[in-house]
Length: 157
Image (cartoon, rainbow, N blue to C red; front, side, top):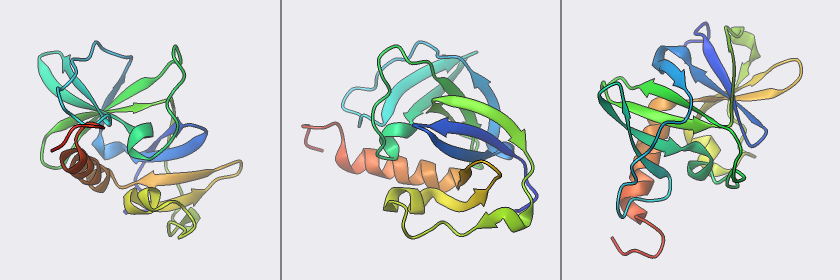
């Protein structure tokens, strides 16, 4: 990770997360989503954002966190990957854009669940909380790999 890059902070089930701003195209309110038949639950479906079809991913499900309560608000962070494909990351809350100091970033602890270790590029120590810095490309790769290999619960692939 380039330690001087800016991060968009967000939250998933009380866990702080930092997404490198260079991947963030925009943050939107929920958009009507078309489910993808036989897709794993982590793939919520497809959205049409101003003529662009975007795969929407549930970050809670991908990271093994409990489901959001019915009626809870959320946001969708539109991510543009290095390959040019867009994805929508569903998060509970979006915070601020910050530029952390290089010394604040530490290795992702081995005590975190393996799914967090696989997609984290480090942990930031802030005054009042810890923030897992997301490796966006690795998160998408792992999530799509999980989706392709397992399919929807109860459906053989």
